Image (cartoon, rainbow, N blue to C red):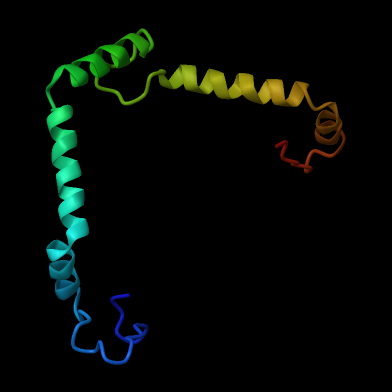
Length: 116
């Protein structure tokens, strides 16, 4: 849309269509849609302030769901070892549920089929 070589302007609208990225940005900020989006963002910010009760409830919920031993500032709920254990357990369950794949792996070590 902002690449001049790819843009097709309808005849008669040559002077009305923005030509540069700055003109596109200015046109967007003058638009009715931009005003609606800004109003929705402000409404959301007023309903859910950054340090309001909803944020506190979210932090408490995250803290209670986090694994014991996991850092409180970590974005992950499981520790690294718990994630590795979970991956191994899931791989084992997948392998156990697909006996044909086991035979393929045992008989043909280079055979790597993916179970979906």
